[in-house]
Length: 126
Image (tube, rainbow, N blue to C red; front, side, top):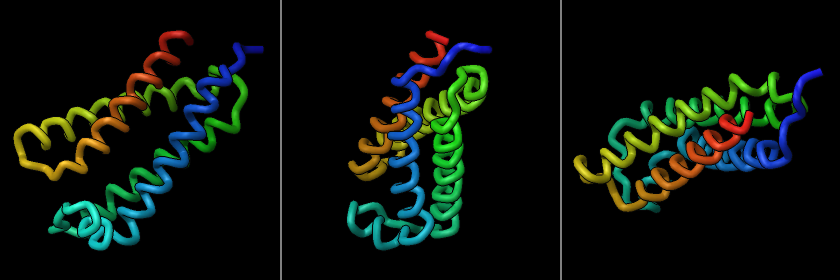
């Protein structure tokens, strides 16, 4: 039998599932309404809907990983989360610094960076 998954990683998967589900559904279903709420003009609705679908996909992977018990069965999900959240945080940071994204982008950047750090910590602990 393999190493049991830590309760901290299980909690991280659950929190990530909830956050990804909320943002994913918002981007998928009501991108213009959400954009107007946070002063973020939506010019290409299809792109935001695609981002919402991707977020829901990653959220689903976190839900399925949350239901597992062994580290080996979720290791690849953790690696994928590290890649996704790190790249997402970097893209958001670039957009905030160089592409004049609205200030709500900081919420996205901080959430993505926080998940990147936490998933990396759990990966290193193995």
